[in-house]
Length: 548
Image (cartoon, rainbow, N blue to C red):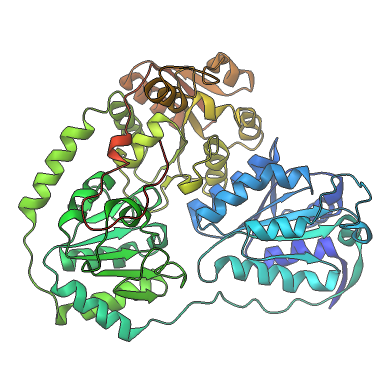
């Protein structure tokens, strides 16, 4: 045991849990924490942003890119509220992010005294956004609470967690012991359920596989099962790259709708299976096998024929071993060639988005990280951007919060400094965090932002034009000169008006190894939504999602 302040105990506990970076925006409530970080002599690197939203988005980006827990720290009240969109997104994306949040003096919490940054029931708010949230009340509590928070973030379905600490508690001193770190909880493989699944899938003539982010650490195992079944693998957004899109069995989300129509068995791995179950249609006779580490997920919309609660990698290994006893031969080459040709013709009309995506792909290395914002290029990328590895396509998931991408890309870059990172953003979303070019320059984070500028919130404007009689309101934007804007921070910048020019500029920017911006003036782009909001093709469907 050693006598130390709460702040020192927290820093030591974070380091013992493998945390090497803290994303933060400092403030008086957390001064003792930052003093402890300084005294820790670089064991934990501090990357400070210019806004709390970016500190949290950076932790999120680092978690998404690595799969490892990441930590951000902000002051209470407005600091936490500024960071809350990233916490909400971390929840939706199953990201192990720890929010380390300051508090007013412990004797005044929830008393309504009007202290600086006071907010009623901050801990209750945190519990709405996380799977684990507690208050550190004394130095000796800190190590166990840090361990518990990180273990909770990684146990079962990964999700954000939080700890708050009062300004006076950070400075309190006591004897502190550091308990051993327990590994995350992992459910055992249910051999009986695996055997049932192998029989269902092995006997099917036209099985398909749908993968989501829960399979990101099971790429080899997923590939083995897919090849054994000769089954097309449908992915969307965070499932992309688990099976390389160059693999013959990898199919787009849009193609998946066509395969779904004729499937006689479905294997869903680490996915909510949201779109097929809410829009595409499922009848009781279609056997669905669900593999998910969250026991609440498989029956959320309807009960599957077989639910296997467990970590994707060991379950898929067991499934691959069980399949030969039931598996039949399948020749689906003609079927797949037909669907692929249909999709190539259909997606080829999505111009200029497709050519711009091809240009970015040509310049970005295969292990480079592509972060898409809520923008026209981003929507198209969910269908058509080639992805060869897991965790290389970062997408906002069902929160789909405009403006998330640049800070998220900075975090991915900070966590993986040897990798190339590109953020594809629109002019509307980019301005949410554009000032973080200061952070990129300060901490030498060589993210390249490719800003597609149509002078509007483009999706909003198109909806108003097409669905509201061209009654345009609050959708047009006034923008800076983006090239001069980036250069004012000391960053390099280019203006490119064609896909070829984008590729050339991006190659130069990535080679420079410095923060960069490519400004791409564009006009109105065709809608991709008919390839995302796909029709019901069988059986029953839940009410159609209310989306553009």
